Image 1 (tube, rainbow, N blue to C red):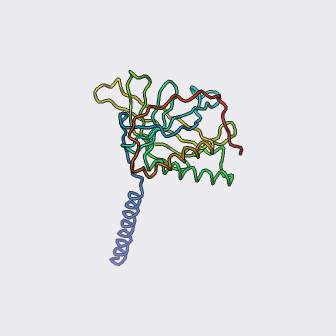
Image 2 (image 1 turned 120 degrees about the horizontal axis):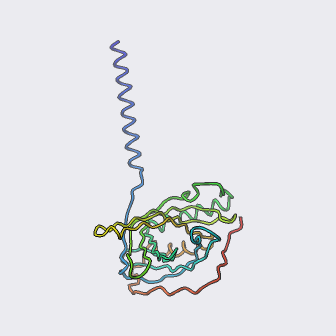
Length: 238
């Protein structure tokens, strides 16, 4: 009996050791959330513009194309996509890690596209190529509350009208004003749709700013209002 008890204790110790080891490994491999912030008063300069498709009000109807200025904030080394959606202006910021994540995700999407591995019925396609951490500043009017918070940005793809689009899914951001609860804001989840050519244009800009210039622009240049273009939504044949 004593021998059996000793064997049982040895097995129990081994099981506990393995459980602790696995738990430690999972903790080590768990993604670490890296927040960052950007000041709207920091030096900024327009470095280009890209076309992006957005859903219409309440998600009804066809997609609408928008020409979005791309702005570089040199102090924080952040690239901003400034766009309008449902009466609000959004400043979506990408740090170096996020920009690298976008480039890598687009590469994987192109590989799946060429191999015809995209699935219309895949419910998790919006998150297929990973998640990066972003920073969001949003405001309705110049005299209303300017909200800001970190949020997750999921990279993947989605089909719309039988055509695939590379997608950037901006998760909700929660702004809390400790001085006035009435100022608290939560941004909506927003999907950005890119054709491969449009995503490639943004990836090229991101790639240029992966390693910042030793003499980044310090001038403050407000983005010009982009010209109005016909809402001809480009599509990728698939």
